[in-house]
Image (cartoon, rainbow, N blue to C red; front, side):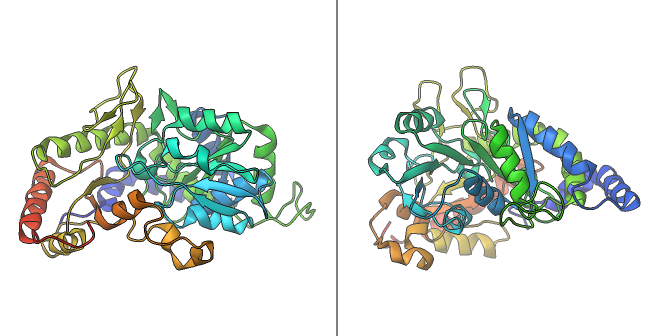
Length: 392
């Protein structure tokens, strides 16, 4: 079996350091907002090129609290993508705001920056781009539009910690960047965890207060907040892993480049694209990010588009090759958003991606032999399921 993501191998490689860090937390018995949380906040802020960071319970809370701290609420609109995990719009809804969807660019699967301006109204308070699969969005255009119209940018970096755009780390472009430390993320803990990074001191202070029941001083509460604190044990584990993240992300880029080489000539497989230095799209990611390259993706997922996706997925699974569909139903067609009145065909690029996208095994320890086996299995699955599928 070739797993989609091999967390066991990652643990084995860092076992001694991780075990020691966990034992130290247990011995010191400082479990809530202890020294590891504080140190990790400083380290992640520096890693992202931001002044401040606040550890929270998970990536969804990071989005929710960032929006709350910016006073986005009922009557406000937030522009975002329909092709992402539900947490993005869940956070928008939790503050009482309305998600407004804009279709994706079919090459990167990210929010199509060219379509955003048409969706801006007097009620728009923020643009929420998602750096999906570890691919940075077109932040130059997005931030320019936001500045032009006086709206904020909140970045969903759940899948993209360490990715960069014009040499600048994602999460540092907008008012806030929101990170997830879910175990399978590029930097993952042993449970749930999240963080908000920002250069805004006031936003930092408010998120920090909201995460601990809305009070700056214990037992004195200024507003209704949440119990959303990053766990000290998880912070200790993340501190062990963080120094290895840049190398792990580089290995992911190299594995993506290798996949693209192995898939060369397979016309039925649509490969990942990255923005090039001129703004053009590069069909093959570079193995490294030379100066002048527009983006450096970090490949949380290596995602292709294939015909007959569901049948191909079943065939791969039967053959022992891990794979996953992120995401089978775009958000505008989810039942939770039925009241918004979107119908099939509203966002054709997102809907096509939802029918055809397939994520293949991707993790830093993925071997050449494993990649070649994945490529052979996908080729065989495509051949075995070659009958045309409706609606592709």
